[in-house]
Image (tube, rainbow over all chains, first blue to last red; front, side, top):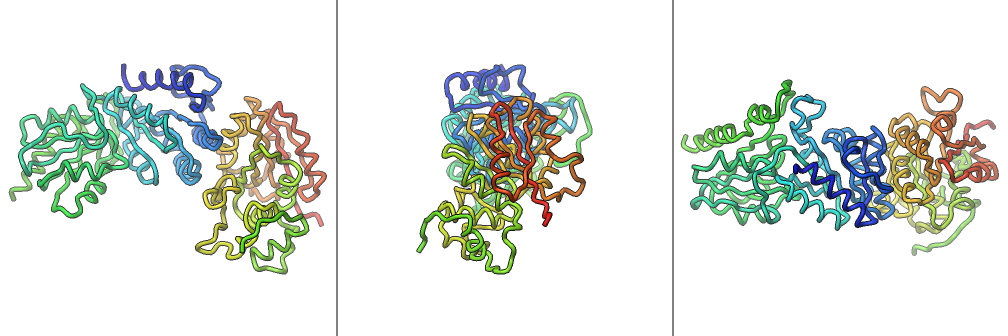
Length: 294
Length: 214
């Protein structure tokens, strides 16, 4: 089962188990989610979707809002900023679609900038799970608090889940080896890209709050950092730089490039075109490390 | 010393003068003053929720909160200054009695719908020009169609929407399934009766006409 299927099952379960939980949708997912007195489908009205979530939170509920990525956090961005953030109210926003799941759908259904814009607002926890099991873990945890939590689901997923919070080291290189940090569903491709390289490979599914302490601890004595993110390139570069401000470092930011990308096709084609498949990641890392020797 | 006390309608001019330092202004012309007073003095019950969506020009609201003992009268001094709890738009984190923070238009009504969905009786105050914002109509349509009887809206109609509402803004609400009453927004018994016309079976809008006819 993919993340979306897992989320629909978990959301239905949460509605049954916890009377504080309410679900707010705007047509997307309504066919897959159960009808329930606390499942409010407001029609194709995304500003209202976020406002309603805020009003439910005002009354002590734990609202979960769900839609396609651009319609959940971009179209109602001021509602996310004010109705939730400024009002100091909590909600769980769960998006599906990620950067280019809708490759055939074109730009209107793609949102590689979502994490950057949510991260520009204070107080948000942002999860980018790389596996349905990781999605389940962060979703269940989010149901148990009143924080503002953004969970970004994707059709892309890793071959295995990673346990543990924050930055988890999966493979350790030699002392001072380059440090490669893969975020969410980029992990499998990143591991393939670096299989024969002397690098440390670490993982996080939670880019905000960024695990600065975890990075400092895991980083060791190297100089080079490669950040691989499945959304807009550089989204977490400033976080890495700030975490390592007292260490001489160079950072390579791999991700979806900024630009109007006017191609359709498949997610795999987009992944390759953006340099986010194993081959592209490897090429970027090789170019970056070659710069060392000049 | 900050003292919490309950004052009356006749104390509002003094509180407004204290808030703004302006002694000459004709306070009775403030568009929201009488509606806010009637709502808080005669309409709202202890379990009801009030949301001020039209947060622009909150002087009357702050004076009312002070009169009702919901903020200290002393807080009126220094309105808009760096450490004041009272800004030119309210912030509910600084003033919990404000219900919501507002200023950007078209946010209160959707939030009111969410609160009303829990069964809470909610009153939301908006302006007629604020209704230019499309987010309000998302809320009006949805609330009307599902018959959200716990939701009450008051539109302060000073006829300031540039492109107007042909036939009166209440026509739009009625079309969406609301009950609607227009009243004189400065006449206390007219305002009270307009709110009392709510049936609880569908959302209700009071359009408080505050056009200065004097």
